[in-house]
Length: 345
Image (cartoon, rainbow, N blue to C red; front, top):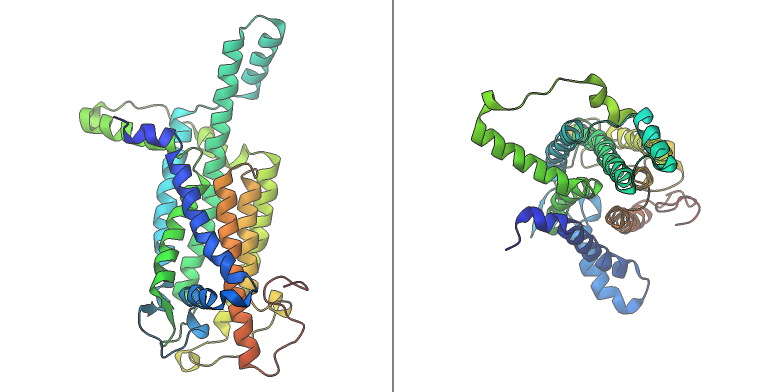
């Protein structure tokens, strides 16, 4: 009989995540197709995604208040923090830092024939595993910065209209997203981390706190995930930061449009920052943020590619509906603005 950790090691986790992301992308792509034959299907799919101002206020069946957006980020913060702590702990306890001197010595020994092939391959495999864990920690740190800011914004920046609703399916999708997205970012290290945590719990339960092995604390090992990253990880972090900053600015602009509850039902044309080019710059910034995570991962993990593809497809659909609403709502809406991609779409 195959136990849980064996299934995880066999790639079940990554496989399930990839299937789920693909299942989410496919119907959205159908909704984005311009064919008139798909109008009925498009209307159903778009109905699931509608929320706030683009959802008819009279529609309350199978909906929840839009202010429940806060739940997404509560889940996101708690789950991302848990994964971050577990991965960071695993990196510190189980994959000791290999200094460059040690690595160079291993390579020289291998090239001069004083070390056998299996020894060099072991060091190489150990280093690759270490890099995967450190990369997962760094990606989760970026994700933590994102969901913490989004939680703060939903609580203190946005002033949702009392009549604003969203479809229950969209609500459940949001809860799934902020559970699966952090897990996708660490899917290459998750099986080993999962086994490590289970083994630690079993050891703690069996031995008790007083009998647990205590290792000497090394401050350098704690900060390794912050400094020992590859060049593309830093490029991705820069791209992430660019999107993060602009999304914060755009959300601040949207929040300022409704300074108090008496303005909660009023709609005006936003302006400033990326709003001068597109109708949904906060969605564009979100795409940039997840694009940064993709680049920081090295663009080699299919699960993260599918995560990014889902974000792009989902936000394209939402941006198109929002742009259409603006055009219908305001006769003087700026004609040069595109939905989400400046000068293009």
